[in-house]
Each structure stands twice: as structure tokens, then as C-alpha cells.
Length: 105
Image (cartoon, rainbow, N blue to C red; front, top):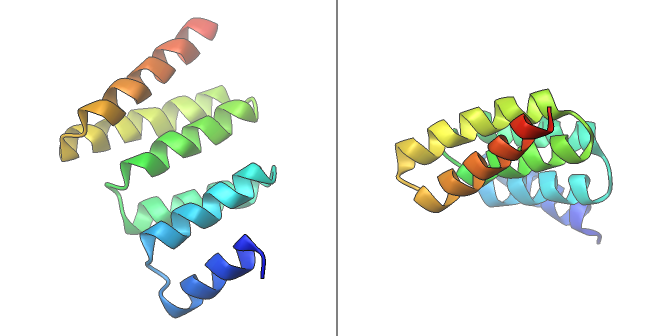
């Protein structure tokens, strides 16, 4: 069974499993399925708005696909999540990426 099938099976049993949803989004991203990946990230973040890594990886996926404005929006939401949860490391990483995207134009 491939990763997508295995993660999908977990989500069939437990649709709100954050780790499996994140893994599924990441696997789709690694295979270049940007739209499917973003759908999974959106579902993850709707169910778990403070799953801070989801915002960062969604932003990276979007930036890699040349969708900088959407990536910036994800980063802004992720920075807010990091502030809510006190995750200074994630906050600094996302702020650095946001600054880089802003400089790139």
C-alpha cells in the first residue's frame, strides 16, 4: 500500500486525525499535486487551526508553485497561529519566509 492509500485509510477511520491529514497533504505536495495538497492543508487547518506547521508547509508548497501571494496569506495566518500557541521557532521561520517573499516582490 502506498503512502497516500495508507493515510487515506487512516482518515477513513478518523477524519480529524491531524497527523494523517498533514502527512497526506505533504505526500501530495511531494508528488507535485499542488491543488490536492492545498485541499488537504485547508481541511487540516479548518479542523485544527493551531496546527502551525500546516500553515508553513502550505506556504512552502504555494511558493514552490509560484503562488507567492497565496503563500504570504498562509504565512500571515501561520504567524497568528504561532503567536496564539507561543511557538517562537515557527514564528521566526515563517516571518523569515514572509520577509523573503516580500523582498522578492
